[in-house]
Image (cartoon, one colour):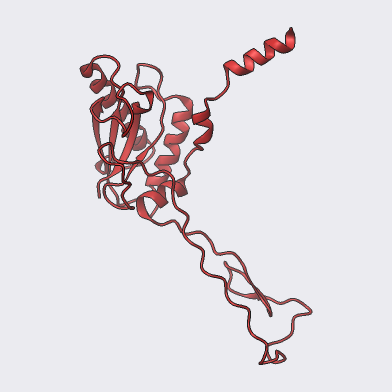
Amino acid sequence: MRRFSLMLIAASVAVPASAQETPPASVEDYVCTFSGDCGEPEQAEERPEGRLTATRGFTLSRPDAPSSEARDPATPRRARPAPRQRRPSNLASPSPSSSSVPAAGPGQRVNLRLTFVTGSATLTPAARAQAEVFARSLLMPQLRSMRFLIEGHTDSVGTRERNIALSQRRAQTLADFLAAAGVSRDRLEVRGYGPDRPLPNLPSTAGENRRVEAVRIS
């Protein structure tokens, strides 16, 4: 009986599958999405005469490695590996009016996946942690000169007037949080759309429409 009770408790606190499948964004994710700077350090390249480090640029020779003078000219050199491709970011959100995702640049948008206390503009602890990551991202050199529109959105449950006001307050809450973290208010605009811009292919009542998005302006 006790084991059955524990199973019920575990089920009641389980994280929804959608939340488990969406890992928190990192500073690198935001930089990649908004600036296109998605580079990663090159892996150390193995060579016959030793190992060339990607960070230092010097060779660590192996004791048994032949010198360049002793190498047989007829022995072909090992082909250099192709450069690593930039990793794509999975943060970019489709526009509410289009299924296409724009490339990094003005107009690029991201669903920040912030959660609020029900019916309020108060960030949950998890949302505050994610907002801190976004704030650090905006202070990175790649994004420091960019301006952003912070958009609040809701579903269509309830009156339109109430939802627009709530979406505006939630967007403003994030803007205030970013400003307190050191992001200049001159870089931020705030707008609440309420239920007017549901996500593509979703009914206006879907809970996924309750979101805050950041859109690069310049």
